[in-house]
Image 1 (cartoon, rainbow, N blue to C red):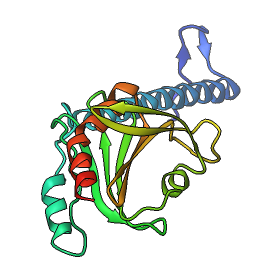
Image 2: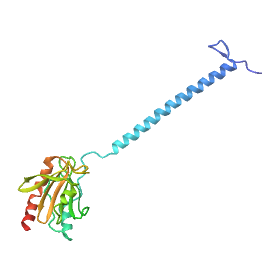
Image 3: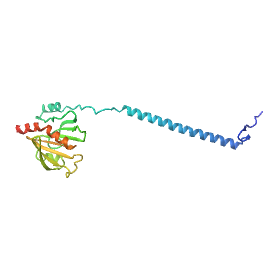
Image 4: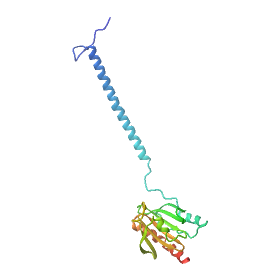
Length: 212
């Protein structure tokens, strides 16, 4: 025996087929909407969890100390063809990025790259072996000498890099004769760090000048 249609309390009568279909469609739409919101919340929570893991995984504290020992590296290089390499007398708070002999120019050079204690920019200390008079200007992309100054008893040529071509991040440069070699200090840092680097090699430059 067929069951009579269910009376809907809100209507006081049984639903028509159209009303039943409309009610089911509205119910399905509400379910899908709640499911979409729930999925968005879950996805957001997962994303936040990943971000938290990444943040916690990043090491904190100061930069690790450099592994480059300038004096030790210089000693190894001196055991080959080159001798009397300068070793700047700078505090350990100056981080060393590299120390090597390169030959980007026709002149071979002992090159040390520092990040000064101030943490501002970088400075390169280069010793050009048997460097010609134009070597420093070539390294500084055609910069010209604008003045001379004395730092810790050593006379330095100060180069004006503002008018030089394609100097990139080079903002200053000092060069001094050291016997047959030329010591060039340049880069992008503060004036105090530049002068400190120059003073750190003064005694060694003096020795090379006296030897020649």
